[in-house]
Length: 399
Ligand SMILES: *Cc1c(COP(=O)(O)O)cnc(C)c1O
Image 1: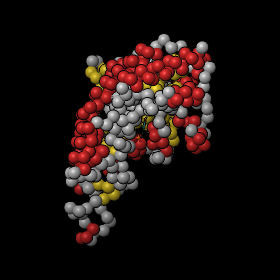
Image 2: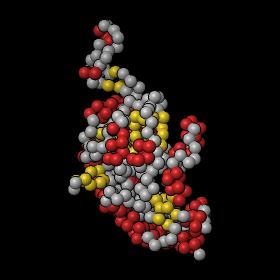
Image 3: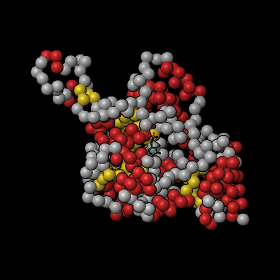
């Protein structure tokens, strides 16, 4: 079975984890700090805070941004649930603006049109790995005093070029915070894990404290325990909690794996680009199948592809998506649908009253979307199997 995505684990990864198992640190130790430092350098951000999932990174982002019950957060409907749930976690209202039909990324014009006075944050997603128009989105948001969070869980290593300079997701001045996930289907993995990056000292410190129960040992920020008694006075042992945080810590085993994976990330990205090029070429002339479109201002060679999500006009080829997927599965090819527009989820309809029709472009895309297998460990043979399987299906159904 060729799944739609999976990890690539090799001997150096295994060696790195075993070495850490034999070390003094299993929890937050030197590998966490080193992973943060190298990841920050890689994306070009000043600070990186490693956590135990991409979802945790998004939650810390909305908390660090100070979002609360009176606030609204707008994101793209074509994303994983967590991009919107991170608003609900802090009592804010998750809301959605439509995507650009071609890139399937949040459209700055739709964002502007759907802006409400209580909108205080935007979560801009790099769908499938293609960088969103973070500058366009940021110009809309910042003009209105909102914070910009880029959800680059798909876009690890993706970049755009500006005046000849390559700027990775997480390294642009247009996002206040950028989040990443290292779940095994993503471009690199730590088993489970995530990262929050920012250039703001204040946001980074806040995220660090919230990652660990809201606990601080920073002498300068102590408030005190409310008593003059000697035993209550801070000493070397002292810790203080001024706000509610969580245990979102990642451990040294995971970060040893992360460091090892990060060292091979450029290879992973290149292999994914190679496979995408083969798919694009093989599928370009298939009727009723549309390969992923690239925005005019995005350079294909700078995209780190997480998903290969095509659009198939199932009505015209006379087969339902479900049948299509089942048939491919029988040929050993796994596929998936990314994504159901988040506001159509029962929880969102019930809690916020969202209705079908809210984001027509997103819904039109959703009805035709199909993600084909894409991961760096795919062999040329796997790729051929997918190409032949999909081509056969389209042609057979069509005849
Ligand atoms: C995977 C993903 C997340 C969540 O990451 P986890 O590590 O699974 O918590 C958030 N947003 C997007 C777009 C994702 O693809």
